[in-house]
Every structure is written in C-alpha cells, then in structure tokens.
Image (cartoon, rainbow, N blue to C red; front, side, top):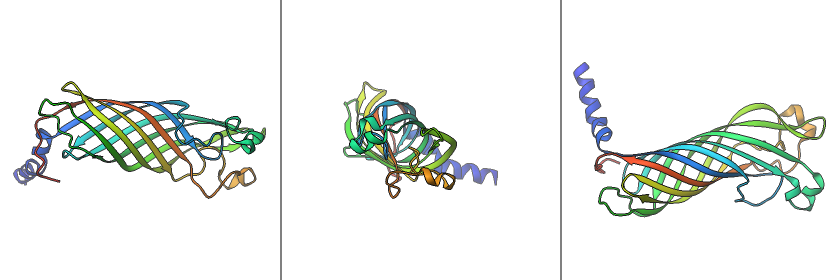
Length: 226
C-alpha cells in the first residue's frame, strides 16, 4: 500500500509540483463601498486596502487564484444626494476577505520565451469575509455591535505585464457583490427593526481598486492536463 500510494502521488501530483508556474505577491490600493449611505459613485476609492495574492498558472489562458485582502471603507451622507445630505448619517467599517477562484487571460500568458508578456484578464470565484455588523445607536450614530461572516461573489477586471524575468505587475478593479445588506447599518438584526433605513431589497457591494506585484517561478509547464 505504501508503494501504491507513492506511485499515485507521483502520477497525479509529481509533474504539477515540479513543472507549473506559480506567482506570489502583494495587493495594494484603495476601496469603497456601494450601498445606502453616502455617495452613489460606483468606483470611488476613499480608504486603504492591502493584501496578498497567489496564482497557479495551469495554462496560457487560465490560472487558479487565491488571495487575502484587508479593506477599510467609510461613507458620509454629506457626499450624497440632497435626500441623503438631509439625513446626515455616516459610518466606518472594514472587511477581511479570503477569496479563491479562476483567472482567465484574454491573450496567451507564457513566461518562458524571454519576451515581454501583457494581457487583460477577468477573475471570479467565491469570497468569504469578516465585517462589523452595524446599527443606529441611541444617539443616532451608526456603530458596530458584532463581528460577522458573510459571502460575496468577486467580479474583477484587470491587466498585467511582466517586468523583467521574475516580476509581474498588474492593475485591477474588483467589485464584490455581498450576501449582506448591513455593511452600512441600514438592515441590522431583528432587535433593531425600528432603526432600519434605505432600500432593504438590495445587498451592499464593496470595491477594490489597485495594483498587484508578484514574483513568479517554476519550470516550463506541461499544459496537457486541464
């Protein structure tokens, strides 16, 4: 059994471990939220985001990708329309997300012919994130009352290019459609029913806009398997 297990491990995983291309790096940029408080601009980074990213390039056209991102965001009705300005609410929140999925390259991405590489790309998958559940308190301010976990669907578009032999520089904009409507305190739990406001039929979004810089290594890959 021991020899059989060793044979199967080499058969299924040995070539991948020694022959695929990997990338690890950092994400840095800005973030904003889209919901029931503040401005209604979709892409308007007003706070700080930082994270880490890893990719396994399985072919010239696709890669498996995983990332961690910490993003802060804030919103103020003073920057919204006339109705929101009259209401006068504001809040601060942050998310810590883990994401995994598939990155698709529009053009072939091949790092082994000593030629500069460039391609636009799309990414999607599934995201789990931690955030502060908010509600309007007795003084009329939006404050956090509990940490929560929720899910989101990332929708990312970007471009990337090689910088020398071992570095890849990218720029991307990524919206996350969340499964919660309470990043902003507008739709808290039942204990706060009297404090709900805004459109309770739409969930919140948050957006990352920034750059990635990653280091790549690995032998010339065999693209014969998926």
